[in-house]
Amino acid sequence: MARETSQFLNRIYIGFFILFVLFLIYFYTGNTTVQYAVVTIASVMFVISWWMSSKLFKIIGGAFLLIGFLLAFVSGISFSETIVHIIDNMNLLLFLSLLPFINTVIQVGGMEESIVSLIEDQKGRLDKIYNRTIMTTYVLTIFLNISSIYIVQNVLGKILNGEDRNVRIHFIAKSTLRAFGLAVMWSPIEILVGISIDETGASYFQVIPWIILISIIMYLYEMKKVSTEFSQIQIGYEFEKLDFDAVKKSLIKLAIIVISFMALVIGLVEYFDSGFVMTVALIIIPFSVITAIILRVFSYFLQVSLPAWKAHNNTMQHFTVLFLSLGVFSKGFSESVIPVYLESILRQIEGFFPFILLFIMVLIYILSMIGVHPVATIGILGSMLAPIMSEATMVPIAVVMIVCGLGVAAAAPYGMTSTLTNQLLKISPYKITKLNWPFSLRIGFLAILVGSFIYYFV
Image (cartoon, rainbow, N blue to C red; front, top):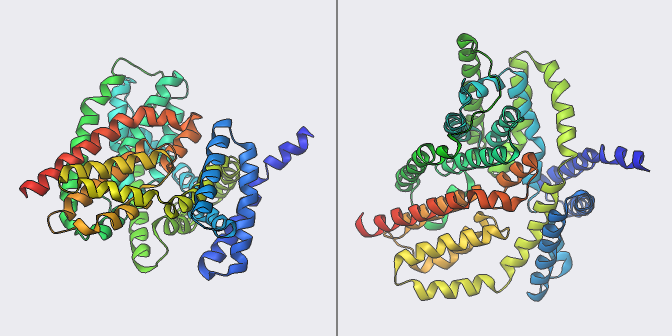
């Protein structure tokens, strides 16, 4: 029986493969019959993943489903109308399932050593490695978005493998997630930036100087203040002596790859109406294959990438439980009376503008803690704030929406970045919240200060 169970668990990737193929067919055809098939298989994969998940994720996934269905029922939405929303986040699952391909091409192309060279300190001083990790993740995020988290965390996992577990958790969760939030908040290809601009009517070029200012201030704070937490720690990892010519060539290859990837994403997002995450998911495999061919490592790429993809998809239970249940929860929440109640609160404070900015921050943060993505929250805020939107308010409101929506990514327990980190470190998502909550609060209040300054003085 144990052997049969083990064989079954080693073939779960087949179920995901069928699910994603059908989802792509439905995504591009909109066929109702295919949709029902996707919903059915997704429901089966949810049950299997729920069975395989830890107790914590069983509770989280079950609670999201139950509350989502209850809210929908109270709002008069039938079960059949609600269950189809289990596939609302399927594009995120597809994206996450394909990340091993982009990581493998970095590995087999000899560029993993480049990343190690960027973050290493020959004396093993962890505070120096922290600063270099922040810088490296920041730069890579500009080009690779969330893929940078997966790549850098895997490198750090090897470097810190022999260190104290608590130090390892603190270092990886803080350095990579905070750098990601700081870099992505001014990226023109980040979906939350685009939605915030659309909802407020502000210009990207009006908003972005203030976002970059906030990003730089917090980046310098991380480099100066937070790195001191690791100043007394020296790791035992033996970094290889650098071959500067080899590193230079490897860094040039890495730069060409990430710039090409970003240019391709920007071009396709502009040309096709598939959305940012879906576009990235669709180009990961062809981009990785073409890159491997150009680098003349295609055979090695195939040998490494397929087993890595199978192994990764066989352990995607936490992602599956979380993102499938979140679709149902988000539907129930948006159809309930809660958004109406929140709008009534906003009406009572609209006379004092900093309170409105504080309300935006609090709403984004609280809803992020219970699994509502900031993109959905900003959609709710857009309709609530429409009556007070003007030339004077749109830029500061957009700044706070963007900074808080992406600043909380470092601490939100159910976001993609936190779930990726949880998968690597095998910790509770609330541990990540505890570690990065001070960062999210700092950057949120800084955004409110900057937003208030814009409103009153610019």
